[in-house]
Length: 281
Ligand code: ZN
Image (cartoon, rainbow, N blue to C red; front, side):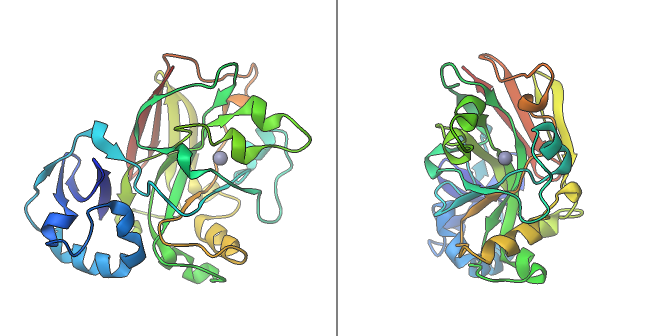
């Protein structure tokens, strides 16, 4: 099943351009906002599996899609989670849980739009698969981890490298939390829809040139292993989002280095989920 945040309302997506409004179809039992579904995810899924056969009543406008979890209590990101990306950035390949940091929630935006580049900055791209939590998780096992994920979506962990690298230790959280630096979308996809939830192809292009092209099967800490490891410390809450790491091909690791420029178009995709399109100014 695919669930979109369309103009602030939860919609079951039945085709790329059609959906069923959750609040109307449930006569007010669920919705209207998508974030209200996650604390009742199991109950919602049980209802939605019967409602998904109904007649669509929403024409989806890509410009009106928002992040599938627009106001998570926690937005957690994992760095250096692909070996080639660790190499290109000059860090050692992690042998334990890779670095974990926060992306502040005010930086979340939807799958389309214009992002302002911080003046004087070096803004870089990082395609990632984002897992949205559907069931609270604390000290769960690897085997249990996928059961706590409502679904996955596409994310960009946009990163301003000058402020990230300034100072005695990297400022991951701050440098990745400018307004609209955490786009997500175009919708949430439950993992039963995917051919192989542990091997998703992901990538992005700038003005048509592919710059990242990876697969989640190459994650150092797989998505379920990351969720289980995070849950050893943090209580993951329904609606929380986990950016699971970016493959190689970021601008920082290129020679010469390359960063996003005004007027460029960044397309970001994950096979089986869809794509996002952002421009910069
Ligand atoms: Zn990242």
